[in-house]
Length: 374
Image (cartoon, rainbow, N blue to C red; front, side, top):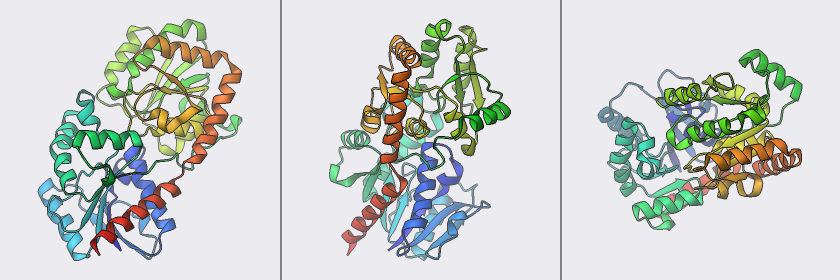
């Protein structure tokens, strides 16, 4: 087979769920598949680390193309290289609408349709305008949980046989690290010298940070020495959360770290007493698995895909109840036995997911779609 993959998200969105997925898809294809031929679309003027295999070639695409010329160029790349399957991992965005080979997209979730108020206006317009057209021409859809599969099939009235689930995994960098090493690093790098609760996942309203901050404020006097740490690139919703923190007089106890390089995140996770993920909607939810891979006890919402993915390894909360979130945080912090139990269960669960499994299942999907042509 000759397989084309739009790999640009691996560079553009590294550190996000879609960026991690695309990066590891390419990384493990390079490791696992020596038989099929690959052509990877990659951003111009960027390093091309995935070319280091005889069966993988890179096509650099200029970064400043408008949509018309991008589509023209990708169609030409597909035709000139006699591609059998073209796979777009970033929700299908960028897939040419005139079909020149078999098409596969990875549609991680349909948040812009389910919770449009939580998505930026630019992305919302692109997603809602383009994704329905893409779904009509794609040969199959890969998604990341049974919850997402059901959601996609119901919303778009798709035959479930057209949608395949491949679970994600924590990257190998997420693992338990020596306590002294972690303390020294986070003190020197981030000036953190206090015990803390951790949240990771960005500032989108669907991540439910407002309720987490309010829940923390309800119990702050009982856990005065324990702070709340929130890394993440400051987005349009950051100011709203920052203002809430100020209004609740939590400025000295809630710490925004801005964007943290992926390589430093294992230290941030390892340093936490507890990880809390109160999200309202997820297609998969990588941060809880990353925390679990670092042996950090985890609290998560009882909604959407999270119970499916995290099974009995997390303590679940009603994400719409600040009181429930607060009570569960207090319960874990005050109960060493429960903390240890959650840490051990989470660590074992994280090991049951792997990128090798994800990519092996993806290769089977490629073969199945290819076989339909011949």
